[in-house]
Length: 210
Image 1 (cartoon, rainbow, N blue to C red):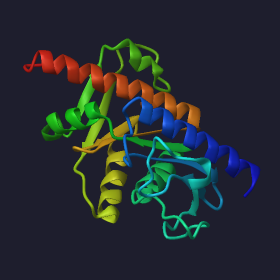
Image 2 (image 1 turned 30 degrees about the vertical axis):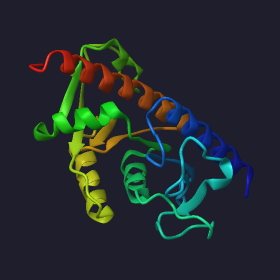
Image 3 (image 1 turned 90 degrees about the horizontal axis):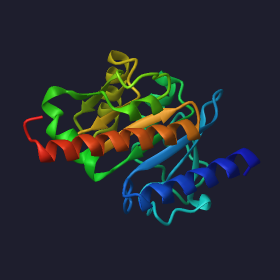
């Protein structure tokens, strides 16, 4: 186990426990990854079925582009590793974070029929990479969830291609995916988008006609 992997595994475990404490990845929900090398592609990723509030660096796995390739025979990578790989390859991301908050689940259900939700006018939008004004209009696509990971990965790929400026997407009744050039940027995007989803959800609960 090299120094880069140890440091990345420690950072992923810290983020995992933090997100659980904030209600964004309770129980075994959510999955997080970070790129270790590009050629060949290697990434550190959380294991399947792990309690995100108790995750330790020793549980983090290292995988390659083929999801069944794992360097830790005692662990199984997240079932959604294929989705992480699609995002990394199409967005050039250095980290991908997937949360399961209450508000992302609610908002993704309410707006599923529209195929996404337009977010505009909020000062917090300026926390998204490249956004300079609260007047920015952020389209957050909503993808129908599926247990068929290869089919879902293709839906994610098509959505990323159709919305090249999006900073994330929602899986309906499931949660938020976002990414960044590195773990710090991806973490910031989670914080910004989770804030915005909660704000929208709360506003709509007070005014259902919104």
